[in-house]
Length: 151
Image (cartoon, rainbow, N blue to C red; front, side, top):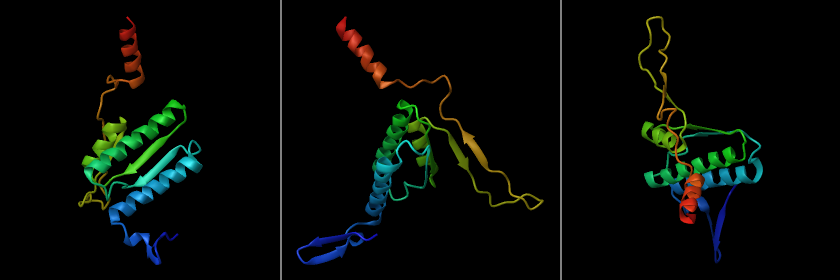
């Protein structure tokens, strides 16, 4: 698909108007717009390969908040949903897992092989929060505030 911008009699391809990061964000926006208009609640999984590759830290934090909202939307409607993100930077993976209270699996690559010629298993699971931790729910906080104001 080609997107052409027209001003007066001048035509130019949109890819020449934006840098790589902006094109990447437009692609993500198109993907999610398509998901919301055609795939919402029909699919239980979204898988993305490093959607953060062109994002600065501020944009990435906004993206993780968006993913958190998307997961909460499915949870509130009691629909099964999983987000699978393949991230190339460990610190960004930690940020995403913390924001969504998600499971983080780290796949490490080993340069060395075992003596038999096989590779070492380098998959590890990182638990960020204990099972006892219960994050506050915004709805409950507002109910408590309303109850305090009423009394």
